[in-house]
Image 1 (cartoon, rainbow, N blue to C red):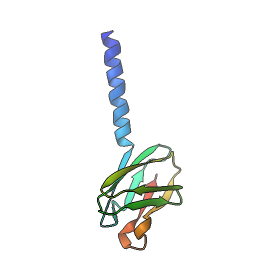
Image 2: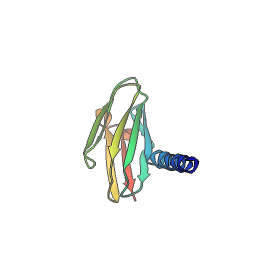
Image 3: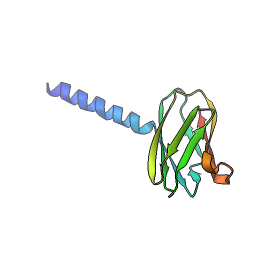
Length: 109
């Protein structure tokens, strides 16, 4: 019983580290993404956390990824991606996409 419990705890620890590695955080502040480029592994599912620090809503949009998500002011949204093929996938903050910092890229390697 003790061995089974130890094995279960080790398995859970391994799963939680995999989940943490599969999370990417993007921050929107002053209608600008940070970081502007994110690298993710090909063939893996990714949880993208988009944190909007602005006092106004933002909209994450990526036509290549077929994703669009409204993020209310001062809140965080989760966007699930993948598994993705290698390549470059552009995204914008749609409400301010003509602003220089409102674009970014997900690079899948």
